Length: 94
Ligand SMILES: [Zn+2]
Image (cartoon, rainbow, N blue to C red; front, side):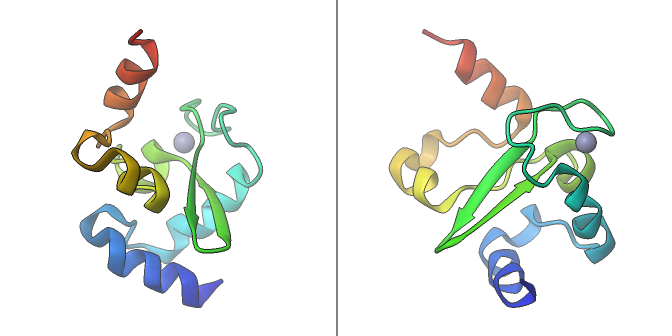
């Protein structure tokens, strides 16, 4: 797991949590995609990288900044929402 999170961090740059402990705390949201985070009740997000998949909480682990899912970010390009608020807005839009 360490190897792919290192690669992810390189890809995500500033968007990736810098504290490894914060990421470990993310085990609490493992398998909780789209369910509320047990800590802050934000909807848990999912990111995919190659064959790996990871659930994370934007608020607790990323300071409110979404990580760009590789597949989705390629698909949506500049339209990819950068924050949870933007993502929610997008989901509400017709
Ligand atoms: Zn949270």
